[in-house]
Figure 1 (cartoon, rainbow, N blue to C red):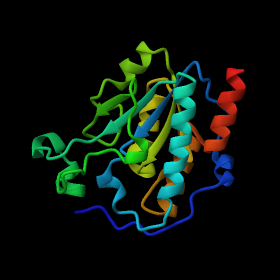
Figure 2 (cartoon, rainbow, N blue to C red):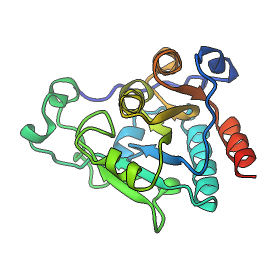
Figure 3 (cartoon, one colour):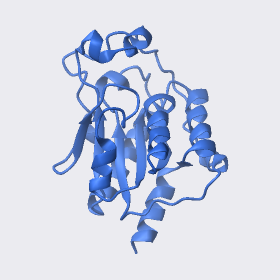
Length: 214
């Protein structure tokens, strides 16, 4: 089954902050930024203009700020042409995945990794599953993670859940993530805010990080 065509919808706004049960703020000395699956294959279904230009712009702002502040920047990518054994049950839900076009696995140009960034290959929804991400964060002394990318109710939400299970505070950034539609995007924010982390916005993350850094 291919990915669905994604029609334009409005990104969540400050109302998502009312979903939170906790009042965490990211500490730049303890934080890492994750850019989740922003590969061409996953971005093509978005019908222009849609939420993608705004999401990309916000991820770029976060990348710039984090690199300037020496906050670790991590990317996840899924590999093309996976075997059925490697892809597992994802095949039942989404078919063969990446590999139909030569550039399927390429990270969107404006968000390309820079020297010093880390790119993690994953084969399941969560960025923690079978990737060594937990150990990598521990080595860098990081127990806060900013989650951006696609799709909010799949990999982003489950990454937040696994972060929580591993004692890492997840921040799901509402306007730096995108999803199949408005309903599922809010579903992810509601679940994270009520159960395992913080739903937040790019401006608030940047302000909090800057304030804490001072």
